[in-house]
Image 1 (cartoon, rainbow, N blue to C red):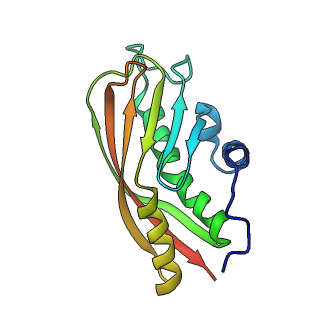
Image 2: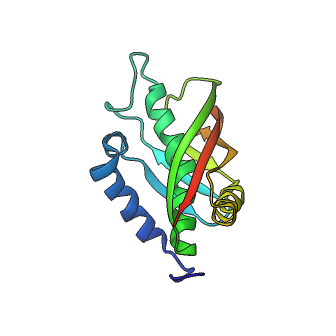
Length: 160
């Protein structure tokens, strides 16, 4: 089952995120999220408040916030596909966002439900069909206040 080593380094995942932003999803490359932490349970991604990510109110533009939530929830799918040695098709089927206050500083996006995504990947492999699961991403400012909550519906299908 496992074709690859279960020890996937954060350095390798940072490189994959960089390449994804260059070749597949230019919006990710434009916003330049930084992968801070990654394990089976948790991901932390940071987006700096900059000229590229600000809106007219000098807070983070909601599109940049959406990119952060996308990357935080999505990186687990790539992580588990590497660990399990599967090729997967991955997309978001839905998203609900609550913007609680202006993000007037850098923002860290955190998900602590990685095992739900792992379970969806395993279920897709066993059922040979697409599986959807909902996860929550929290966005926090530099004062550790929650500025936004995202409920993301992650849709995965193991190929082959």
